[in-house]
Image (tube, rainbow, N blue to C red; front, side, top):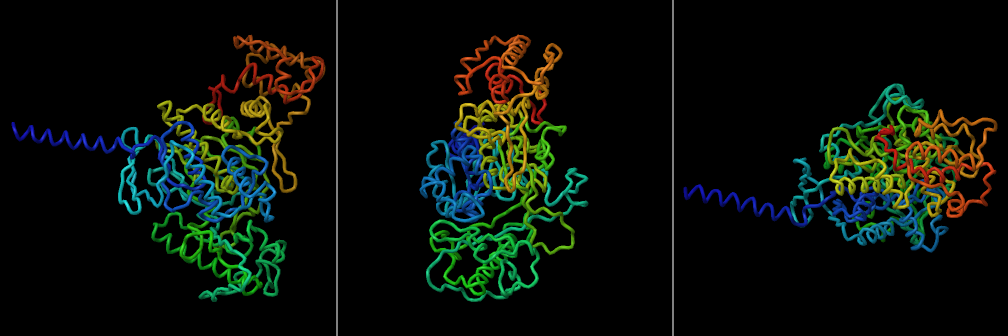
Length: 625
């Protein structure tokens, strides 16, 4: 009996101490693996919404491709300053002295030194009391036990630690956590039979986009030419620009002057981002399924290739005063911590976003435009210059698309509870990944992931049970975009109404390409046509037969108000419609009840009186529920 009591006491003490340990700092609401572009914004958003959040990052920097990989020239979304992306851009502007000071190179309107981006991300993270970051930390093992994740992590200098969390976000560069958790995924190109995208290849393959090991060069004002790298062959880079070595360019229409090439990624303070796609330092290797050791070895070749290109710039083109910056990366070789990964695993999510959803959002079976949480306006941009296989690849050079919204369901994997996937591993087709991979979109993906995680924790819900509208409202509260309308800025009082009504489909946006610009407009300042109200009756079908518009195709403000009042009665909404107060509050032109109503006015009228966005919930595929 005595021995039994001793044994029971011993077991009690083990359980007690284990409970004490697990109730300490190593238990969090949200665990984010990866402190890259999406990891940082996930953490900030979740923390701002009250979730106790921890980011694990393998390097000493934050920001991923924007900083740690050196791609400090932002692609797209300059006119769509959504949420934390807009906040980051504004902080860059403040640091350098205005938005114009960020236009140092011609590839982007937002260029900056990677070290400055890292500094800003650290400042943003440090301001959040609910957010912690463990740097130089690697996830070694993770498992789902009950309704929580148990992660074993290796913290440099401190050894192994256990972290328990309610929700986990995979913000890694290559979707490594999703694989560890058993999520299904794809790598490479789907066939057009799989995705029904016209420009997809006839047969699937495992070809991914080129990576790039970026170099940040600095003008030293003196000759800093490096020794010739082993195996250097100038023919590899001969037609990176117009020069005597270029005889047979692969892309004759894209052979620019060396001055154009070097200023492509010119940064502030006499620095240059070397991320040149035309016979430059793009490098083909598919290392997604490699072990960490295999990846490290493979990336040494990518680094060497970049150093060969640096030597080409110095020796063949005469840029001998440009050398690797000594005040950017605290690495032994002065190169970035990580390469620029353009492609990753792409998970099997609750929905899969493809090119057709971006090109024709309103004609698809799934109404994913109703569920969007991020926006993009960059063309489909794939890098396959350095692939030397035999497969015939489709022409994916800046395929034009309208600006688009990205649906929430792409972040939620099938069949794995408690996990959200961010960065470039979301559920999209290979083709459309050529635009969803860009930095502003990935920053927004992270912000949406953080909002989704925080809501799941707050409401004690599974990830797939969280209301789409709740996530979208969190994005709107954070000055984010759901749809990429350019009609009014995010600071305009009408912005949220336009976003909400667009997300119901009651009024539909119009996308178009203008030269290199991809745009979408609600057309708020154009006269509303009665035929454009089909979306209204999708939401309120009972009102369609009761309202018959005769005569003119246009509606007066009086007729529009009457229609909205009738719908409110049918829906049994205890609301009043006061056009005069509404028009004044939203800054519309002088109220004349006999005037034709504008689309923007109708959007606000419906939003403020009927509130269909919040009263008519949608599923993850956009169906009304």
